[in-house]
Image 1 (cartoon, rainbow, N blue to C red):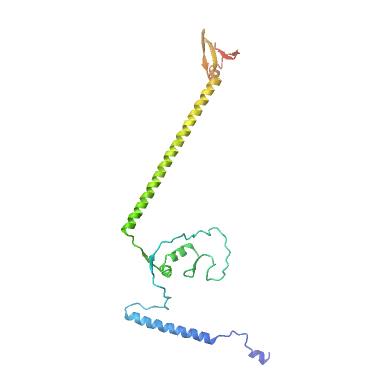
Image 2 (cartoon, rainbow, N blue to C red; image 1 turned 180 degrees about the horizontal axis):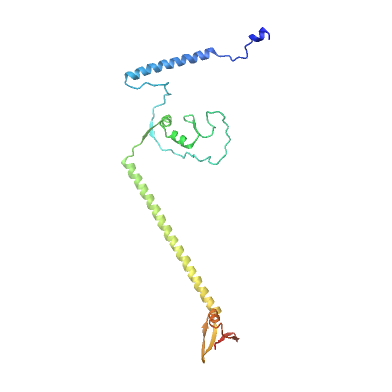
Amino acid sequence: MSASNAADTDFRKKWDKEEYAERARKKDVEERERMQDNEERMRQGKRPRKGPRKEDLPKPTELMKQREGPLELDKNLNKTMVVQNTSNRGAGQPGFYCETCGRNYKDSIGYLDHLNSRAHLRAIGQTTKLERSTLAQVQARIAMLREKTKEATSAKAYDFDKRLAEVKAVEQKKREEKKAAKQGGEGENSQTVIVHYGGHVLEGFLPLLDIVEETEMAPIMYSSGERRALMM
């Protein structure tokens, strides 16, 4: 191996000394400011901060509000998705991403906890306190709920009466059909019967089935469209 090849170190990574020197100076300034801030906090009887100061968020301007639309946490349930973002940061990753805070959560429970957290509410300019309802608002709410309950009760009673009338109509129709079938069966199966029994002659109308059962052991004769049973 020649001496020129041994001295060639171009393959090694080159470091930007000025960039890293600037980073070091910035870190020293932040640490100096943190120490000064901790001294001031200790004079005021407060606990010192252990790490660098967090990003200063704007002061909340409104109370906590109810969400206007659904979160749709189950919109992608049982679906197959193509992950376009292969990094560990930013939107497009599997899970739930908060665009306001730039954070991604793997499950809906963690995402929901984040949306209700103080940090997220502070980022959207809301406090953790709820608006106190006035007397007029409470009275209006009670009146609205009372009217809603009244309408639901009336609708339920109306449906019950309607259903009861339908059931009665069906039962009445069944009774009429049964009565009509019974009357039609008697007209078709009933014929004039003359029974000779013990020297007496009995004549009348009986259903055909009853005739068969009563005269099963007797001789049966047919004459001029009449069914006669001679019982000995």
